[in-house]
Picture 1: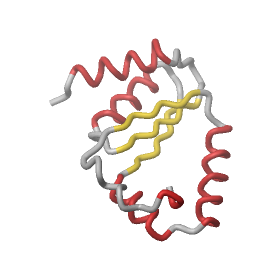
Picture 2: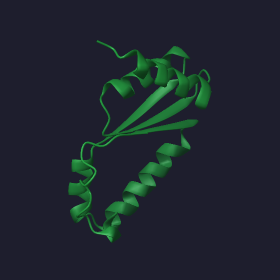
Picture 3: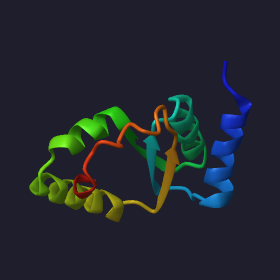
Length: 111
C-alpha cells in the first residue's frame, strides 16, 4: 500500500522545491531510504514530462568501498560524478540511515 505522505513529499520536491520542467534531466540520489521514496520521485518527475536518473546508495556498501578505496578510485568516482552532474538540470538527494554508526570505523582520510 502506498503511503500518501511519500507521494506528497515527491510532489512538493518536484513541483515546488525544484520546479522541474518538461524535458529536464533530474538526478535522484537516494541514500538508505525505502525504495518507495525514489519510486515516488520517478513517477512525479515523469508526470511533469521530465527525465529521472537515479543513484541508489547503501551505507554498508559505501563502508566496504571506503575501507579499501585508493586515491585513484576516488578520483575516478569524482570525475564520473562530475560528468553525470553536467548533464542534469536538477538534483534531489534523499538521505536516511539504517545504522548511524555504519561508517564510523572508516578512516577520515578515506571518506
